[in-house]
Length: 265
Image (cartoon, rainbow, N blue to C red; front, side, top):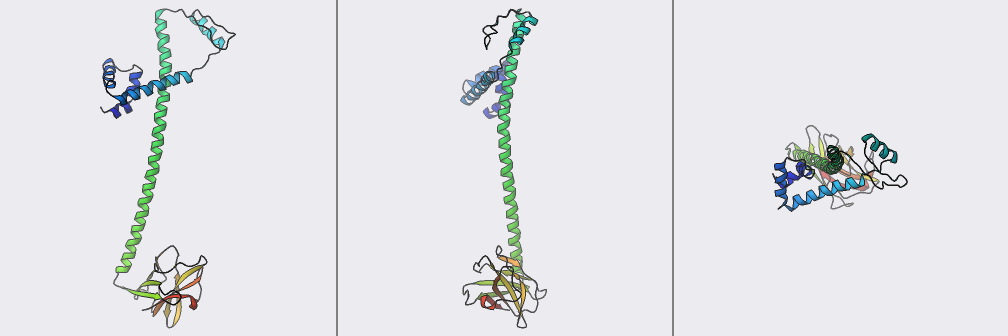
């Protein structure tokens, strides 16, 4: 068994409490002779039990001392005027001596063991919470990646569809370097726009896509600032497409002096 397995198995706690079979007790003795890690763990266990015996001790009430002594027929000398016991003289047969010693050892052992394992449990509980948080973060990351992958697949499907006409809209004097592309299916009217080439607008403004049909502009919807590729309203018989800058929420009619890009079919 490896050192880590021995430490985590609880065998060393039983060794300190002299609760192992003689053969296993000797095995631990032999192991600790050449294993600093095991010795350190044993020292920690012994320290924990000693601290418990010290910190968890309680002073019994004076009347209980006398009452117990009388019932057990022990001889007891008490200084009841002092806060602490001055001295205790106990006379009992040999068998009671061993029983008393065993009882004291048992109380210290149980208390120390409980405190030690409570510490172990608290540590494992914290580790479990940390692992749960890491697992939740990983799940969120995987979910986000899956969403991003789905969006990319959707874009590729639109761009590579031979039925979609690619109408490139080039910048006008208001923004000469601006560009945008409409992917438009002439048969069913479904249209998408790639607006990654448009410059940012003010917080109270928004881009809006228009289709030019029979010389008149037809609203195809506003462009969400947080997206660069999105589906717009369906349209048929368009001769050209244009994008203007409008107040937040869009306009009924385009603001021609704020037309940014234009492209003919």
